[in-house]
Length: 156
Image 1: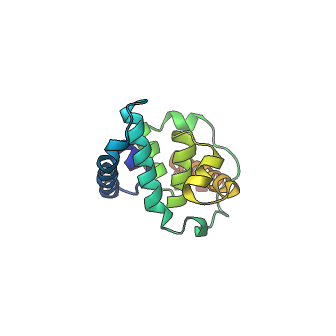
Image 2: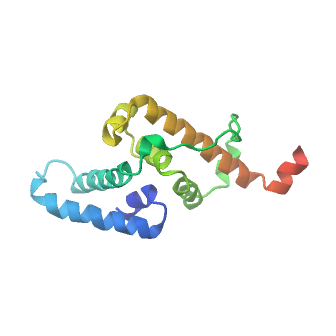
Image 3: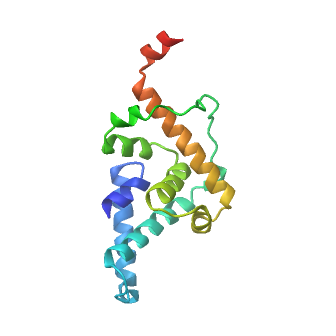
C-alpha cells in the first residue's frame, strides 16, 4: 500500500503520512468489509480515496503551468527502454499534484474520466485536460533525460 501512496505523494515522507491516514481509515471502516472480494482491493480503494481527498483541498481545478515550451511531438519509444520503473515513477512524482493524481487514476488505477471527475469533483473535460498535460510534461522530461542540454544545443 505504501507504493500506492508513493505514486500520489511528492516524496516519501508525504507517502508515509498518507499511508498512516489510510490505515486509520481502514481500521475505522473494518466492520464495513463484508468479506466479498479481496481485502487487498478494498484496502487499496481506501488508500486511493485517502490520497484523492488529501489533494482535493489543494485547488485542483486552478492549477496552471506554462507548457508553451513542451514539444507537441512524441519521443521515440526507444527512450523508454532506457528508463527503469523507479526512474519513471520519479518523473511521475515530479508532476504537479493535479496532473499526477489524474495520471495515476487513469493510467495506473484504470479509472475512466467520468469516474475520475466524480472522485475529484471536477468535470470530465478537466480530467482529460489534466491527463493530456501530464503526458506532455512526462514526454518533455523523458526527452530532456534522453537528450542532455549540450546535445540539444548542438542539434539546433
